[in-house]
Image 1 (cartoon, rainbow, N blue to C red):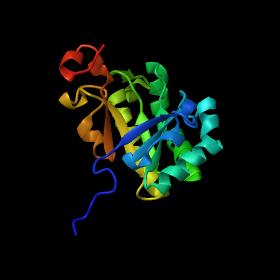
Image 2 (tube, one colour; image 1 turned 120 degrees about the vertical axis):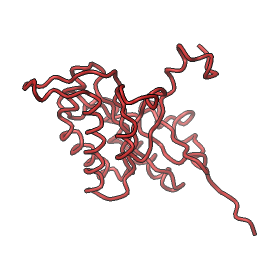
Image 3 (cartoon, one colour; image 1 turned 90 degrees about the vertical axis):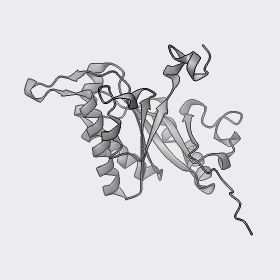
Image 4 (spheres, one colour; image 1 turned 180 degrees about the vertical axis):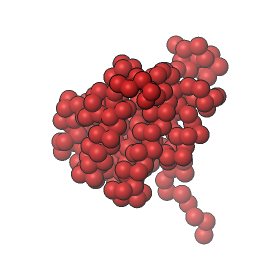
Length: 212
């Protein structure tokens, strides 16, 4: 008898917004988990010093709503990862990247504590130089975001081999290594690259088939 696939044959990666996570109409109770492979809790926020922000998303993360999501997803063989969002202001994001050891320690602890399956990195920006108190130690944010992925790989593997690590990149990032994301370097550390294609809704929307 031929083997019939009972689930997705490709990655089905969906972001779950914290504020509507438990909603019976649009939240996880309404989803068909058999069409998914990975759900990303969106999101825990990181501040300039590398620490977690204790906002409403963090409150939901620590609620029974997250427990229900994790239990339901795992019952269907679906992974749950946590998305971490870095500061949007360049100087604050640079500080957060320099303080990445704090972020990694806190997030790996949360991954272990909540029984989720890994981390999705969502740090967005443009190529810039991150200044240090010692100018000789200035680094590009490209090198620092790569170091974040590298150190997360080490931290997650030390906690338990097999944790899933992904990073969100722009649609044009693979065109060259002179932007915020260096794809070949990042690929050495992450399990997948999530391509954020919303930027195609602007100058390239007519070629990408999107609508303004």
